[in-house]
Structures are given as C-alpha cells and as structure tokens.
Length: 419
Ligand code: GLA
Image 1: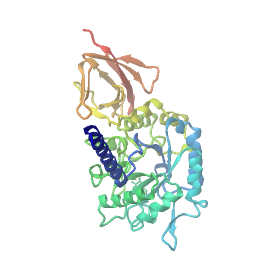
Image 2: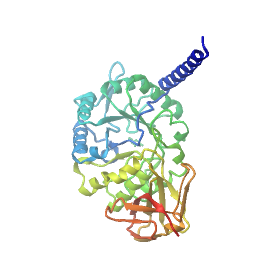
Image 3: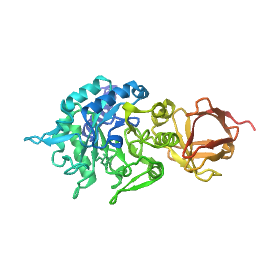
Image 4: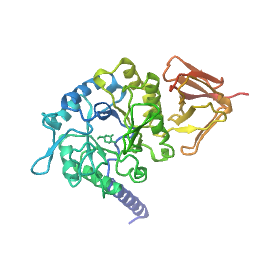
C-alpha cells in the first residue's frame, strides 16, 4: 500500500469513527437537538382559562392565531394546559375528557396542523396533575406513545403530587420516553425552578421554568396560602444569574405571558419587552378570540419579537451604568450582526424622566465577549415601540417614561467617533 493510500485510509477511518460517534451520541441524547433553536412562540390556555378548556376553544384559538396575524409574526404552538384529561381506559391508556373533547386529541391535532400550527399538551410527573387529573407517574412511556400517536408536538410536564420523586430522574424518564416515540416533541420542564433545573435540564428539555407561577399584575405577590404567584417585576428579578444557562435549544422559561389579561397597556408592553430581552419563550396566555387591537399590536410587534428570536440566543442582562435613575433599570441584549437591544424599564408607579448619556457609558458583556464603548463608536438607535422615533448615541438620551413603561431600542453600529 502506498503512503498516499494509507493516508487516505486513515483519514476515512477518522471520519467514519467521528461520524459514528456523533451519530450514536445524537441517537442516545434524550432530546431532539434541532428543536427550538430560537425560543418557542405560541399560546397556552392556563393563564386565562384555567380548567375551562374544550376542543371548541382550542380550534377557535388556532383560527384566531392565524387571523390576528400572530402566526405570521412567528407564533406556532397552540398548547392545552391542565384539565383536558379523562380517565385511563382498562389498558391504562390516557383518554381525553369525552365531554370537553368529544372528537379526541388526534382530530384536534389534525385541525391545528392543517392551519400550519402545532399542538401542545400537558401532563405531570406525579400521581396527579396540579388540578387533580391523572398524572403520568408509572405511565411515562405509554403516555408518550399516546401523545406521539395523536400527533402532539409539545409537552409541558408539571411537578405536582411528586412526593418521593427526584426531579432530574423524573424528567429524564419522560425525556427518554418522548425520544423513544421517534416524534420530535418539545419538552417544557415545569418544576418552578425548585431543583435548579438549569443544572440538569439542558440535555433533557428545550425549556425549563425558572420560577413559580406568574400572576397578571406588574408588581405584586399573590399569596395563595401555601404558595405564591408573582408579578412581572418579581419574576424578572428572579432571573438573576441564570442567563449563562440559556442558548439555542435550551431556554430559561420565566412563565407564560399575561399580556392582555388585565394589566395596563404600558405594563403589557413592558412585560413583553422584558420577556424578549430574556430570550424567553413567548407563550401568550390571553383570549386570542377576543383580544383588543392594542393587545394584538403588542403581541405581534415584529421588531420586539425579532429581539427575542435573535439567532445568537443570548439572554439579555441588567446593566449597571455610571449614573442611574432611581427606579429605572437598563438592560442590554447582544444580537447578531453586531447589533444590540437596549431597554430602560420604569419600575416606578410615577412617570420618570430618564437620562442616559451614552458617551459616558461602556457596556461590557463577559459571557458573550461583546462590548460597546460609546465614547469611541457611534451607534444609531431605532425605537421599537414608537416606530418613527430614532436617533444616535452621539446625543444624550432624554425620555419621559410613563409608569411601568419601557423605552426599547435596537442599536446599530454607525461609525467611529471622531473627537
Ligand atoms: C402549575 C403550573 C401552571 C399550570 C398549573 C395547572 O401551577 O405551574 O403553569 O400548568 O399548574 O394546574
């Protein structure tokens, strides 16, 4: 054998082994790696409807998602939360509630798929769901098979009635069960951040809740006796320190949105903007069939959705500037093509004057190794809510923020600063 042939053989062998290794490890991974390369966009029934779900609502919601322009803006998943369940049959197969879902979930999935959308469903790692319906404990593989046969595309998997279970193991079981079906199903891990899911969830699921439940208020704790749900600001503050865990195919989930569920327009806008800065899953939680134009315009603001969906998948961060304004948080999010998003968030209940002297600021992000020195570079900015409003970082920024409102811009490099 000539040296050339030997060399080529060696190269092919290395290539084969590498391909085999990656092929096998991909096949053995407990999730489909290609899903949710950007945060999932969709709708879920829980925040507005609670247990009051049926097939008519889900169909009408899919219709509304198309008609409202949400599908065009990128929304894809129509997710049924708790309470779709009936009993298990004699063979242990889970069935839908025959009164609420007389046509069954398969027919519903077909309907949703025909609209070019995807269907999500909900279960729980414990004996029962949080609303007391049958959980998947002991039926994980059987349930996953049923969901796949129905054509389900997304599973939110909750954590009630799980005494004695270890979260990592329980979610590994359902991840393996889903993988084994051969159908790419997104796994939304929902154990409220109680067991540091960011440390073990990335190989198992595409998203994991980081907190307890959200509540439709901007700044509050809602005490249910043994547990609390949280306002937008409270949930936002709980994301501190988690951004390093997020990225394409693995997202921190600060819970589904409350846009359109009773907060003011400014609060809804701020909530939506901050979820985009967090690269959060954007799962609407309102009644899509009857939403106002204002709500629809917030949910379909393409420029803000683009910030969320930026392909780098880098979660934004709170910036401590040289000079701060009391009650106003400044956030930055590095985007592709050397662009950035920036938000000034007014936590105050009063209108607040916000001044930002760009040229005195230097933004450094160690996680993404990105930085801007506004003293040596000029950026142009475009307001993502008041679309006609734009400017450059050469001039100081002075805006009056309404109570609980945001100022949100996208920054593009313009030129070097000539002093
Ligand atoms: C838990 C979850 C919620 C919702 C309910 C349903 O509280 O965190 O998002 O799914 O259960 O019962």
